[in-house]
Length: 199
Image (cartoon, rainbow, N blue to C red; front, side, top):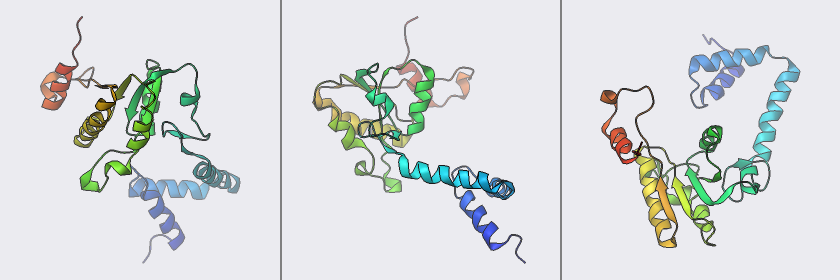
């Protein structure tokens, strides 16, 4: 005997297919949606539809934007000589929250991963290289995640950039504040040592 109606089961399945949403969370969301007013549901659907129709990659940095060029790339206040390369648009938000970085960004939308059939052509590498031709950019900061795929992607891009005469740097990853050194893995400790600074 079916627990849910076919329509409700379909809604739960769709919600459960979202990242980080398990079956129980999907059920809670589905019942919440059923309890919403018709106007709220319509507004919710319109928000999704409008975002899908309006949001696209920036013509320069490949970050998500509603305009042809995103606000960061079009800003006159940013340092055009530095580009920070990140894997995901959410990484841009994380850096912007620090209020410490004033350069530009480039969003790869993934990393090279042969295991997942993701090649260099599948992410936004050629768009990055195209930005380095006029001599404006002096430094590219590789800020991919410290994973095997992130490191491999960083090394691959670095090899493409170095012949262009642009300096390539890598984020210094280290032991997080509040963590015990004895529990840090070797990779984290190596990064922490490499990224050490004089006091």
